[in-house]
Amino acid sequence: MKHSKVHRKKPSGVGYLINRIQSLFVGLLRIWTIPIVLMLSVASGFTTYYGLSHFIIDWIAFVITIAIQSIVVICSLEIAGIHWKANRLRYFSVLLSLAIALSASVSFSYFKFYEISQKDNIHINRLNEIRLDVKNYLNETMRLKATVLQLQRQELEQAATAVSKAYLGTHPDMTKNYKNQVGEGPIWQHYDDIYQEKKQQQLALEQKFNQLDQRINKLQQSLGTLDVATDVEKAYYIFRNHFEAVQRQINQLASKFGQSFSNPPLLLSYKEFIREITPSLAMWQSFSLFAFICAAMVDFFTVLLSYRLEFTAPGPLTSQEEALVYECIRQFTEFRINKNDELEMIIEKTELEKARRYSDWSRMFVIGLLLSRGFLRKIDHRTVEFAPNIYPLIAEKMGDKILEIKLARKNNAAE
Image 1 (cartoon, rainbow, N blue to C red):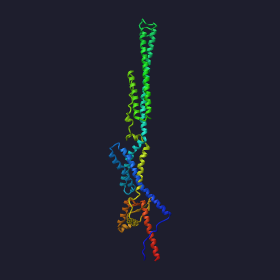
Image 2 (image 1 turned 30 degrees about the horizontal axis):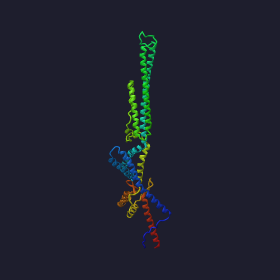
Image 3 (image 1 turned 90 degrees about the vertical axis):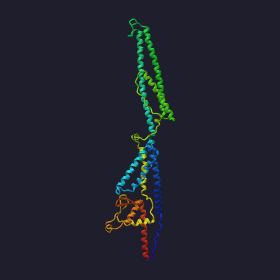
Image 4 (image 1 turned 120 degrees about the horizontal axis):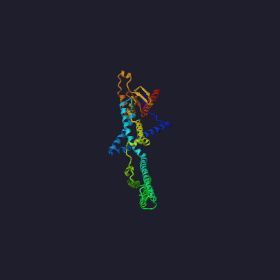
């Protein structure tokens, strides 16, 4: 009987070439996934660190950020290889760790995107608040102005009436000697002096109000240019100076005429006006869906790609390990296609093997090897499923066996 070695015929053809190109492309994509995951983790880590650094010192924020991003990647890899039926406690502990890490990452990352998306809006809101405060204050000023002018006009009209009555001799305060005497007497002169004084006061008041109007116009102009000024600091201090000038003059008029006036608004200082956003509950009250989606999107892709990395084994098998794996897997008899469209097998002993006290140490060692390498995934305590990267290995071994059988039959027929 002749013994001949099996010489595999080197596959060729267009189909083989396409399959090789496809395998190479898929392999490159899997390799490229690793730097993408790392870059996404760095990007998410930067935004997480930025938010954390507002609460704690930098180096602690940096350490916590590394821990958070590491937990996200590690838990994503682990959860992809765990079936909840196999180990519920481990599955839910990993899921809980991933949820906590994602919550922390997204929450602190949200602040950075919120700051970017809402920076202009917050500046506009601050400016609008100042405009509203100034507008309300100027409305109160206009009411005070109207009240003072009305009082002054009433006093002037009363003084004019008194002068007219004194000229006609019908003023109630005149003595009998001057009653009903028409003309400019001493009584008329007295009331005329009062009238002229009131008239001068009216003119002086109108001049003051003209000055106030000019200052109000300057205040409104400085407030209008504040939003478009290139030198914001200079423009803001000009605005505050005009506002303080208006405020001083209004306080003088109110105290002079005994009028009550509401307290002026407390304007922001320049540092408060340009203050950057700080993390607080306010950013959640004015929730920005766009900022939240941007923050969550980075972590979502990190989890997704880390999850997909689980389908690639951490290391290839040697030729001896491949042969051992194929021979041991052949010893199992119960196989089926599960809901994931993967080949599933029972790793427990059959009833016959239990009756014969069969030792399955070698094949269980192989199962442990394949589970640790990522070629198998555990579903429960008695069932495992094939990972996609084990199919080519089994297919190659099956092809070798088929070729051996054909060669053996050919040799037997030749003999």
